[in-house]
Image (cartoon, rainbow, N blue to C red; front, side, top):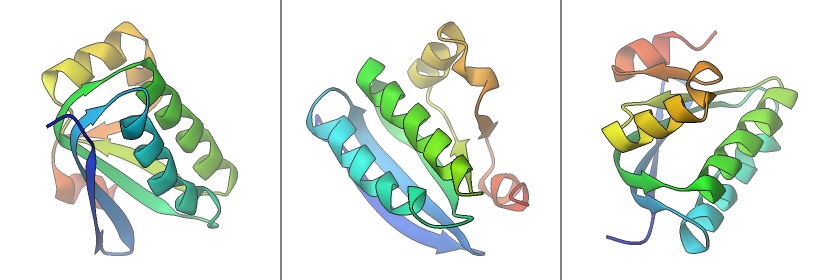
Amino acid sequence: MNTLHIQTRQVDEVDVLDLAGRITLGEGSLRLRESLQVYSQQPRARVLLNFSEVQYIDSSGLGELVSAFAAIRRQGGELKLLRLTRKVHDLLQITKLYTVFDIHEDEADAIAAFV
């Protein structure tokens, strides 16, 4: 699966985006940007990105993630990450972004962590 598929659902006023595929330069990062742009324009958006089915993310995907995180924060919202795969986890560790994001393994805990 080379493209990125995104399913959106709502749990307790939190928008959960289930991501599947690869977030890479081109279609993958563009699709992620378009999906997150909506939330960066909403005041106090609560967004949880489920990475359990993401095989790979490159630097353009990371860039989209960081810019969406900043834009959502500016609007008083929160963006959290859920169930990172080993490759995504390692990449966030290497780039020191692991300390920037609020990352959870359990969906219920992640939902409860939104203020």
